Length: 418
Image 1: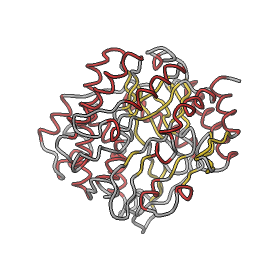
Image 2: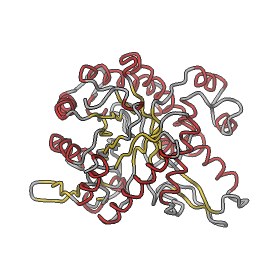
Image 3: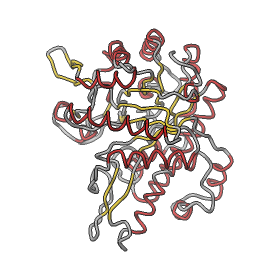
Image 4: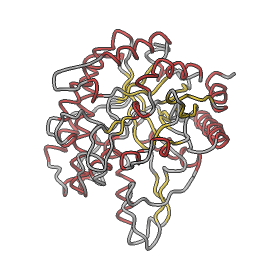
């Protein structure tokens, strides 16, 4: 794999791309499975797709393992596809940052993340992946991508399995995801030792507007702390004095839960922030209540690089680790995407010059993806395509073509100085 195992401490600025890897394989009435690798035909085009990352000048690729396919039954593993992909990474001297949990559990796991055995099972799976690919030098892992967003969609909004709702649902999901996170990282560390690099990733969210209005004050204050809740739990920061400790306790957390997390912390080697300028800042309006999420969204505001800089600084100040922008883009025209690429890269270089240890930049995704609304729709996938990628996806008689855009050259310019 390219680069040093201590790439995150070498003082450099590293460019990455991501392959969208949301997996929600459970189907139901009015609900189609989401498997972005299937939707984007990555399962068949992986060989050339990784070549695109090299063509763009990326050093790192955020890429996920489809647990639901790797472990189709309890105790049975099918590594055949992932083996070929990992060999391709080694062939290209390209370094994956491996997403182990990007929203989906195997179909055989009843109650999904609410299953009491989920934390143990996700740790066993994570250790199996680490063991399988250690000989190739694969050592960079994200145990859970965007765990707080995950907890909201599965635990408060009842939008994804296991369809829990309300404060108790959110607390249950937060606890389960955080326990799995801790056990998975500890299990991988046992396998990889000092070679392991753990990139913790969550969505950067900001709340602005009439946050001090009486009808919003308490809710907005909770949301501002809730952004960090899973990361605070896994890093042992949620004690009796944590602002959300009363909320957790009122919704099912007991003394044993608080003690478990404070006694068994896992720390990030890199703190990843996902920031989308047109979506990451939500606006509270006086006299209007929005619950949040897909069903009742608050309006958003594009605060551009100012919002990104705030979240990057806050992540470093809170956790002390080097920071990486682990997802960013705008959904828009090629020009709009190039403008955001130029502005955001320049802003991160300014942060570095100001002494903030920003070590990387990730354009997400490498090629277009399909919106999560596909799950609740009967329309063809093209109706849900998001124009986000360096490459455009185009329907042809032979499947989805990857169509190069001018953004590739601009990304390569930033990554390689060409």
